[in-house]
Every structure is written in structure tokens, then in C-alpha cells.
Length: 466
Image (cartoon, rainbow, N blue to C red):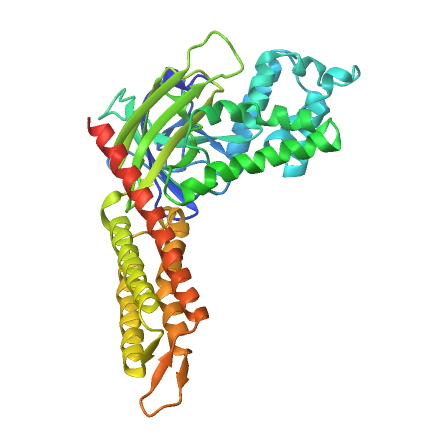
């Protein structure tokens, strides 16, 4: 609970390498405590047991812990780690019950730390209901602020320890060390509002939900409709590129060091518009909170937090936007080309005779197919991968809709009626003209959406530069 006393600095680099994973790379600058316990292996080598972080109880892959010279450091097994966490909770219990030998208390500690998910939920339920059960042996623990702090600290986390080589005759008292931690964390993404006001609103979300659950049928469904409308109102413009796409990341270890530095790197083809680190205790008055904003069009941003209190709500919100240069510019030019071609064809078919020779229609169809091939290749070619590909999925779908319009126009011309005469003549009926104009308007709509996304991105970049 006092990591910041020996953790000097914590640098965390977050990269969005894959669609469903976030890669975190941490460098921890720390001093080994004077009272750090020492263990000895079978060959007589001595190691400090150093607690470096609290990790969430979730699946982590590609975990790697190394020292300053990239030597892999060993870590305790799961059972040893659980014993250390049980000892932590047992020590907190001893501040209330001097001799916690009661079987129920031991069972509660074991279920909370090493039990299954169901046993953990049952143990928490008994602990939270202890004040209403006078005969329960957990009443003294539930009334202790120290025990409650440790219980809520370990209910979703486990302590991460490493075996660090201890002092040797050649290197005595070398307690200032560096440590590198790297792992991939599975993450699910939802589109969120690019506004810090929504973080404040999120704190009231659960309260409003519970309040609405206790009201009538009409009030409950009205509340749900408001939530759906809010999501549509904010998610649709972000999906179309008219607004930045906001992502929020938890920074669970920000309080574990005196100084915390967070670096966020955008995936290829995407840039960071805004970023902010918000950390503190929103339901308590008194302690200061960290609010570090960064504005600018860049691929990497750095956020800082100092002296973050224990048990905070720590979130990093980053707003991404597709870069104006590259794929978005090509998409705007391609949609403009499709719109101009369909507009020319629609005007040509409407202002002159509604009959054309079969050779002319064949040439027009060939031009349309060639345009589709060229434009489709331009739009399909991109460097988006992982999270970036997920962000532009709607935009690429719209581009596909624009590319499909010349194919629809070519199909309408191909199935036009041919008159019976010595010279083959194709008669364009009213339905064919309507199809051509409809295809042009659809392409024009997509072009305006892409143009709006490009224009807003360029305007924001100009304001930032000024």
C-alpha cells in the first residue's frame, strides 16, 4: 500500500499493435527496501523478494520481466504468490484480531485470495453483510479501515513479485535498480464520446441506472432510450470520421510510484488529436487530483502524474483521428472522380436523345468498369492494421458503397432495351435514368462525408499549429 516510498519512477508505454490486445511496456526505477526479505535457492544464491506492482486478475500473455541488462528475472509461482497475498491480508487482520486463528477467518482469507470466482463473490458478500449480522466473526474486520482497504485491494488484483539478485561481495549495497516489464493485455473497444465531461458522467452512470431500476416501466425505458440516443449521437460521427474516436484506458498502477509517465503511440495511419490523464479519488474531498491534458497532431504523446494517492480512479483518454494525408485524401479524390463521372453520364443521358447506339453504350460500360477497378485498387490499398483497421471500418464500407455505384450504372445500361432496326440502337427508359441519377446522388453523399472528415481534420490541424 506504500509503493511510492520505494518506487521512484514508472514509465509505461502503450501501443495498439493488435485489434484485441494492448501491449504495455513498463520501466520501473526503484530502490530495494532495507527490510526486503531474502530467500536462498538450492545452490546458495541470495535473492530479494521485491514487490513491483498490483496486477489485475485477468489473462496476460507475452509477459516478460528483465533487469537493466535484459536478463530475465524469475518470479514466484502462483501458489507462493497467493501465500504472500494471504500473509498480507492476515497481517491486516492481526491489527484488529491479535490472534486470528479462527477457522472462519482463515477460510475467508483463503477464499478471497486463492478461491474460485464463485468463492470470491461469496466471501465478499459475507464481508459486506457482516455489519448486519451481529454474530458474524467478520464484524471487527468490516469495521476496520485497514482491513477493508486490503480486502478491496486484493479482490480484483494480485501482487506481482520478482526475485532480484541480492548483494554480493563485488557489488555491495546496490539497491537502486531498474526493471523492465512487458505484457499484452486483451482489451475490448467501444466507441465513446470525445469529451472529458463523459468521464464525470460515467461516475454517475451506475447510480442513475440503480435509480431508474427502482422506478416505473415508463421511466426505466425512457432512461434506456436516452442512453441509446446518446450513443448514436456520439458514435455515428466518430465512426464516419467527423469527430475523433475516443478510447479510454485504465492505468491501474499509476499510484505505485512517486512519479508516473505514460506514453501512448497511435497505430499506423492514425494520429493522436488529444490526450488526457485523469487520476484521483472522485468521491473524496481534500487530496489533489492529476489532470494532465495534451493537444496536438502527433503519433506519440506523453502524460505525467505525480504523487497519485492510493486507490484512485486513474484513466487515460486519447482521441484518435485518421491522418489527413494518405488514405483519406486518396478516398476523397476517388469519390470525387466517381461522382464526377456519374454526374456527366446522368446529364448526358438526360439532356440528349434517350437512344444511343450499342457501340456507345458498350464503350460507356467499359469506362465505368475501368473506373471501378482503378478506384477500388486505390481505396483498398492501405496500411491500417489492428485497432486502426477497426476505426476506419465504417469509412471503408462507405468507400465500397461509392465504388459500387458505377457498377450499378453499368448494369442499368447493360440491361437497357435494344430496338429492332438495321442499326442497333439502345433505348434508355425512364427507369434507367432514375437509376443513373440515384447512383450519382449516393456517390455524392459519400464524397461529402469524406470531404467533411478531411476538412475537419485539416481545420483542427491548422488551429493547433496557430
